Length: 318
Image (cartoon, rainbow, N blue to C red; front, side):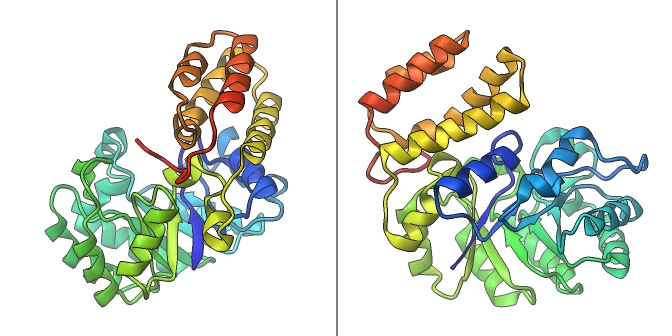
């Protein structure tokens, strides 16, 4: 099985990637939170941090791009090639309302002619192979068969399918029947993404779809950075290794973000997922959320690691 790390803005960026791969088995591939090609032909500071080669040493990283202008996409692809990247990913799955109204992400799925023009332009001119991450449509899964038919016209390196529609956001259950349809009809290799929150979820998925060789882990890996190692070796994450991962992530984040208020906000966002992997952690997690300074934060974190063991089936719980 190939394990890929999903792009989660503010959660699975370069700091997470390096902390995770240093303390646990690394993903086979990490996708960056989306980059936005624009006519200005300039990479934003946040984007530069994500793709700076020195920030991604020792791991394979695929930059994810989001937009609907082929020329802008090609410019950024050329810039990424020059930095040493060997693949880019087109985001056609982001369900954010702000993104959708700009005809980006999942918003392109109902703009069929615009989508075709985009795919024509990028597959004709891209200097790098292109993979696609997609949802099933905007409101109804029955929108997907013609979308998949369109995808089949292009040499997509990998089709990553999150089998929800945009209207679902992250609610309801992934539509596994439509994922099965994708497996039967896609010309591109297919990767599954969606609600694989712990090791037992991945194993159950593999039992239902034994032919699938690629899965993308998002919230499950953010909650349990040892998830891939557990799946590969059976070794469950220990409190000591989870603490070492946290301390690595905290150190790197504090070096990146000197403003203490912003640092606390970023670490609290990480704990939204990471905290799910600990038993009986409600009280220390509440203290972490309420911490207004680093001393309070560190005291709450110390209490959690001292009092709350790692759950047997560590992962995201919602």
